[in-house]
Image (cartoon, rainbow, N blue to C red):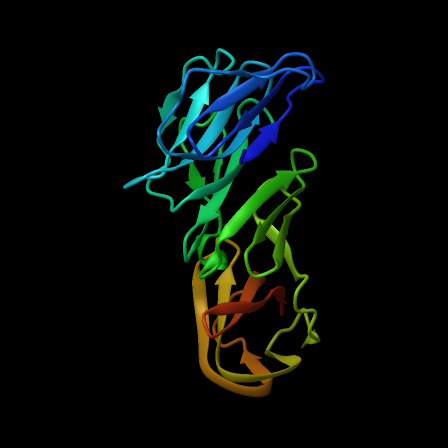
Length: 249
């Protein structure tokens, strides 16, 4: 059994790696198997109500998500592209949902039309990170985790607002922030051939510093306009730190 989800007190669903979906209507006392969905692994399941739900598959050559509107008796494929693989799926409403995955590069996508189409969220933020799970507290606040111990948080229904690494709580300070001409990034880690990437609020790289060594980085504004930016500090293909920068006059 790979995943389980209850959309209500009595109705619940579970999936396994043999492509089977199991259903209970008595709060888990008894379970019945539904018609086999696939011969591939099913990785996750989520239902927005007792009858409408989604599963994600590990399949080749493309990884897929499927949707049911009749309680799991019939499933239709969703167009999600070649995500490798989709490890987790979560919906905050019948229309708005998210999935997380990736194999070597993290993948986070959102939909606002019940899974018909999907849009990537800040793809460069998750480079070299496999996203393994995602969950939302409400329609705006949600969390995703990766295999390196990073916990990503959103407070606006998608774009990442903060990142915490529970495996490596190293000292990291940016001062001043906001800044107008330059700022200093200080860490207690000794960096070796690290790279600092600055991205705008759309996740597009706008500045990069390579071959960083030592514990201090000076970042000059140059011609960057006022606004909110994200920085990613990368070493040995691992994101060490993600944080926010504000540039102002």
